[in-house]
Amino acid sequence: MKALNATFTLLGRNMKHVLRSPDTIMTVAIMPIAMMLLFVYVFGGVISTGADNYVNYLLPGILLIAVATGVSYTAFRLFMDMQKGILSRFNSLPISRAAVLWSHVGTSLISNLISLAIIFGVALLMGFRSSAGVAEWLAVIGILLLFMLALTWLAVIPGLKAKSIDGASAFSYPLILLPFISSAFVPTDTMPTVVRIFAENQPVTSIVNAIRSLLESNPVANDIWIALAWCLGLGIIAYFFAVRIYTRLT
Amino acid sequence: MTKSIITVANLHKTFKDHAVLRGVDFEIQHGDIFALLGSNGAGKTTIIRILATLLKADKGTISINSYDAATQTEKVRESISLTGQFAAVDDMLTGRENLELIAKLRHDPRPKQTADDLLQRFGLLEAADRRTSTYSGGMTRRLDIAMSLIGDPAVIFLDEPTTGLDPEGRNEVWKTIKELADGGTTILLTTQYLDEAEALADNIAILHGGKIIAHGSLAELKKLLPPVKKQYIEKQPSLEEIFFAITGKKEVS
Image (cartoon, rainbow over all chains, first blue to last red):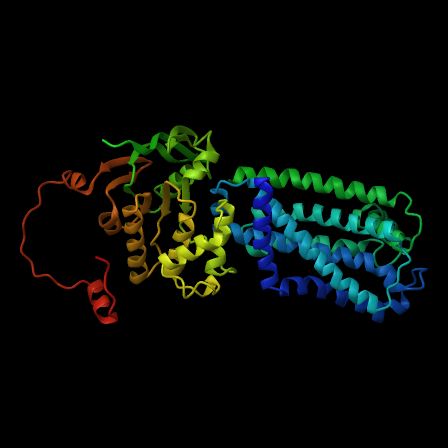
């Protein structure tokens, strides 16, 4: 109970950081929105996905790019807390050490959800439509939350380990690029064999396919289980290393 | 002799191959200002971090407020407060929010009241609702120390509290430290400035080569030297005295 109280108090403090530098939420939302505009209105005409609405096809990948950008701010905020000695201050207080990390993770989830809501609003204006029912929507939100959670725990590691601010957020670049070599923008079957094998077996493709099927109320096949396995697997490994680094550090 | 509130015995700490602490012993009495004096890299911060439960010692025993620092960390954390080498103030928050944050984390039943009282006491009421990024060095340090007082810890660790401050800021902090000690709080202070230890401390320990090489009150330490020779010289004003005369600020007596 005490640990939960401390987590919420610290969460409130972190959220003040987010809300007082709204550019962090905007930056996270703007880049994926720009990409969505670019792909729909510039390249979209020549991309044939088999779907009649390219925004529908594109949105899941765009959301994942936004999450990959968003979690880099968790690394940034943790790095700054450590740099300024604020982490030492918290850790010399009689509060649970887990509360400090979980408050950063909770902040990441909330601010990512805000960014995703903004992107989603823009997608609606661009003609996104979904036939998904309540259960399917809940499943989509669940997968996205799990994906955020996994990447956030991954972000904690460079946040604690980095030697500079740039180093703290550099880990997210490959994550942002991953959707480009996946089924997020174009179907994988036109890709050369080697690229296709990579694309079809990396996490983004299964997550994108699962979300896309859910939003179109199509059967999700195996994708959803592969997607869940990736998110849980990555999340648990990242959590294990993050906590180990944190306890060694303090 | 009064009961000591901190007892450190045979403390060892090695980083990689570098033995920073090689058997440090000292005791601090209740209500004292105790200065740990040493040059840069002598291991002062390492001692503070170990005492504040942020770092584990390789060897040795530490008792704080009669709790063991290695095993009763929760109790020790309730007894202490750390003011690190660089002011650990959240610069995205206001002064008031910083204080309320720590008050809530320390389960203070009335965090708003506590924040108000401390703002008043440290002369920060006017700046209370400004973000601390706009504060001067001295104000930030005072807020930092005010944050450390929440929850009335028995011991406060101040790691180089005046490093990087201008003379005015330094005097503000010195005044604060004296007031705290007058109120009965035990203070462990590290410094590399000899005048700071001389001005504030009841007892001084000199850390050198990973050990405490001298330990005692200023008067006792002075006895380690040969008797003073009397010399008559014309007293020149120090640059500090000139600085304060021109800028019109009074030095803390």
